[in-house]
Length: 248
Ligand code: NAP
Image 1 (cartoon, rainbow, N blue to C red):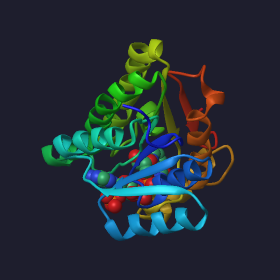
Image 2: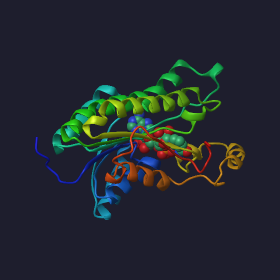
Image 3: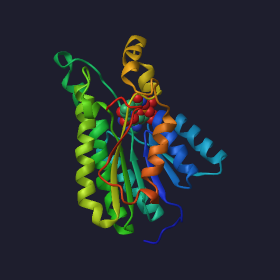
């Protein structure tokens, strides 16, 4: 199928707020046609309005990424409608923290489904179109917790570590087709996710961050912009820690 638009098409999951919204805004600024996925329609509309206001190109889809069947179909539908799919940023994520002795099966499974399984579904659905175009940029948003582990986050750390193995395997499978796959591992970034943390925990973690501050969502967006660019064409299977030095 011939491309129906000449801009690169970029799907960003969890685009309604936080890091995902910042990535969507940044990729739109980079000239991409952004397709934002999330569950909150009102916040997606606000994203679309913001991108339109800066002269960018955007559409949004209300989608639970944990629902594998509809999520995969929604990605394929984007590729079919536009005749291309160039970039996918798997950013949607949740936490259900708790010590292992008290963690329910449901809290473990929910976090694996939304943070890890969704990325598998998305990469599989995106791969065919990327292979056809002989170009692709897959970016999976992991976490420093997936590298170092974190007490109270066995589910989240397992999912985020799993994303690293998933991404490196995809990088090896699809590299010959012009597709790169990389991970961004954020440290503590100011967003709704970290707003929920107790002040005492935030104070305790600051001394371990070399730059002595939390990051901004735009710091992660800048990394995603680079990894999705032509300049990053020889970077694949990489885990880019954007963490102010926390994970050293
Ligand atoms: P956030 O502010 O809580 O935003 C989470 C985003 O994920 C929202 O857009 C939410 O949209 C979406 N989402 C959650 N469940 C979803 C589902 N089932 N289907 C579709 N969308 C879903 O979190 P954030 O801080 O921006 O985090 C973004 C990513 O960075 C996550 O993967 C997180 O694990 C990772 N990360 C964050 C930090 C940090 O310090 N903030 C550190 C390391 C890694 P809806 O609610 O509208 O669906």
